[in-house]
Image (cartoon, rainbow, N blue to C red; front, side):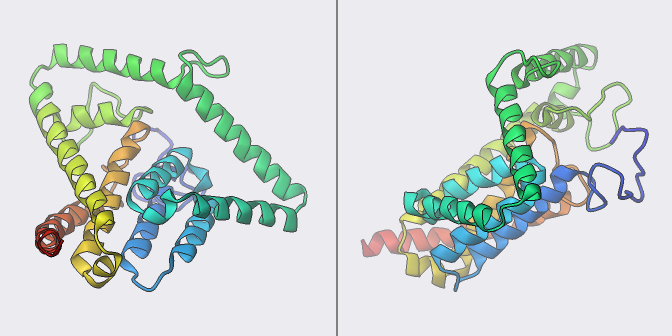
Length: 279
């Protein structure tokens, strides 16, 4: 965004995204969005294959801890197969088997790096002052809120209107706390409205799990609702760290997912009514 070394027209292989997309966070999120589209729309995929597929895809997106956390959280919320303990144990057992089968220096180094990343991230989130870093996550949030308050005092209209998707001449938006940047871009009313709509959509998608599974598999609107809910909630939840919805590779997906979710949600209401009538 505001880094002087960034090429706004073509990102080279030495930049943070490794030449894939704008940022490593957007690259990891793209993998997750593809995973959601495959798991929720595909009708012939068994639950065991869903669990194995998720375990393998999680290894690919290990480059970004926030994306792993967000995608796992959405999966646990929307997919009944992952809520059951035996499928989680299957993924764990498969990972252990793979480690033993391919036990060598590079695998061990890879696992050590992963465990070190997890340790640093957990320490940063749970502590108020991290000795290894200048600030913990909570301190960063507090600092950004104070900075946001100073900005609102100087330009009060941004509280309601925000400043849009362009660059801000007085406020650096390349920080690590994405939801504060989103509030500043959209304004508080629009941000609250979008957040509430996504929460409502997630609740509707979760209620689908109570329906007959054959009904879900045979109804395309129900599957599209779950897929769009997973995509929208993942993009929005990434704001706990990085604000990725503003990227050129993510924003069109956000708009398409909103349109699909709106249409699928309306069509799914008839499914709920018919199911409750039969019950």
